[in-house]
Every structure is written in structure tokens, then in C-alpha cells.
Image 1 (cartoon, rainbow, N blue to C red):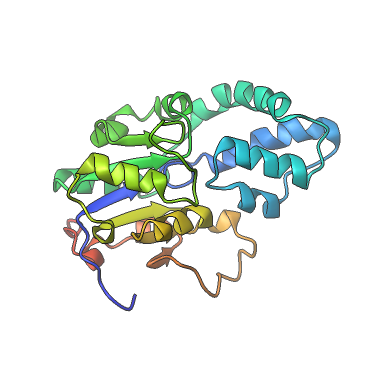
Image 2 (cartoon, rainbow, N blue to C red):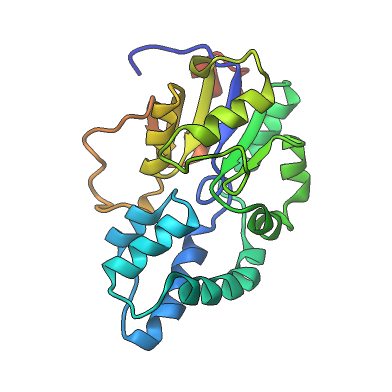
Length: 234
């Protein structure tokens, strides 16, 4: 990083960042595609990651030329999600970082494109961790969020709910999707791109450029002291 911003609050995406749901998304998508003799290409997945359900589904239907309407696909997907997402596991480093920030009274929030109903399903096995966010969880179907990522709305709403006096440049967003990193940039916030190389266009070659403040490949690599946050205990 060329500079070290002084951070006062942290805002987290959820899918693929705090919870390992992207592997589940891929599995259930392939289940739906199987009768059509198709598989889920990584190029399409990357375009869908971080987007709201409607936009992501429209991308899938268009890219794969599926003979399904949005509602037909979404009904199948929702039924599978209600089963599969209950198995969601925390991503490496997620619990340690959340508990560390909460211990030091750093304001934290979740800003997820998931609906409130899906958030409840995905997090039901991890209540003690997500309870640390208290009421500071903003979902994609929240009426206050007028435009989905890459618009900045969800991050700005999350910031205002944390503290009406917070400024965007004092917030640090954690995102696994390039689309979310762009939303953070549009909100004029700093961001850490946690780039899961399992879902990279080229797993052997990291991107030459990006708009994040920092790029890492796992939350395990994050150093809070870089941002003026309390360091991890030795």
C-alpha cells in the first residue's frame, strides 16, 4: 500500500468472505444445469459473484442460453439453497478477526447481497459469531438499499447505521468479489480484496491491477495493525 489509512470501522461482505458459500453455489448451480447437459463455467461465475439474485441469475440464463425464465430457475435454486446453505462453514480467519475487532470495540457491520431470509439460513450454525454484529447487518433486500453492488448504496447504509458521524474514508470494506470491491470504491471507502484463488480466472496468475487498497488471498493474511487497528495478540 502506498499509504496507511486510519480506520475506525470495518464492513464485511458475507458470501465467500465470512462464509464458504461459493462452493455451495457452484454445486447447486451444477445440479440445476445437469439436465440441460451443461456445467457452470468459471467465467460466468466470476461475472455473477457479488451481485443481487436477479442480476446474477439473468447473467447465468443469458450466458448458458438456458430455456428457463427467471422465476423457473429461481424456484429450483431457492429450494436447493434452503437445504445446502444450512451446511455453510466459516472461512479461515473470519471468526478470529471478527472476535478480535469486537473485543477491542471496533464498530463492525455486515453488508450482504443475500436476502434476510437467506442470511438466517446461512448463519444458523454460526449464531455466536454473527451475534457480535448485533443489529448491524444490512441485506440486499433492505428497502434502504436502492441499488445493488457495484453501486455504493449497501456500504453507505451500513456505515450510517453503525455511526451517523462516520466518514467513508475511515471505513474498511472486506470483499471477495471484484464487483464488491468496485462498490467500496464507489462509496469512497478503503477495501481489502480477499481474493479466493479457487475462483480466479487464472489460479496461477494474480490480476495485474485492481481498485482495492490491498489484495490478499485469505483473511488469515490480514494484518489489522496496517490500518491503525489493534494488532492481534502474539
